[in-house]
Image 1 (cartoon, rainbow, N blue to C red):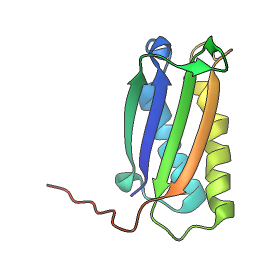
Image 2 (image 1 turned 90 degrees about the horizontal axis):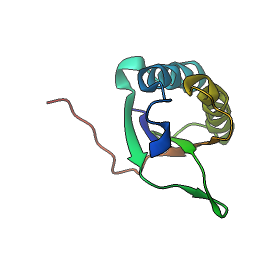
Image 3 (image 1 turned 180 degrees about the horizontal axis):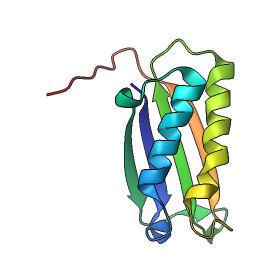
Length: 114
């Protein structure tokens, strides 16, 4: 059920450990909000251009969308956990702008396996 989206600057292509990051975020969701590993789904989206302030700068942002029902404290704890693990999955993380957001999925969310 956790729908995880990782947006990252094109300049991070060769520096980002995608598989390691996905696994770490999945484990953080299990440990923090009682998600199940088989339910975690992560996709990576490359951004051709990113601007921070008035400069071109690398960005790594992770959004975790969960079924409603978690407390704001639990969502904040997961956001903190995800934010804390991001630098370990980027080679030379200096200068990268990291961020994480945890939100509720819309009530109309549905999922199926074909």
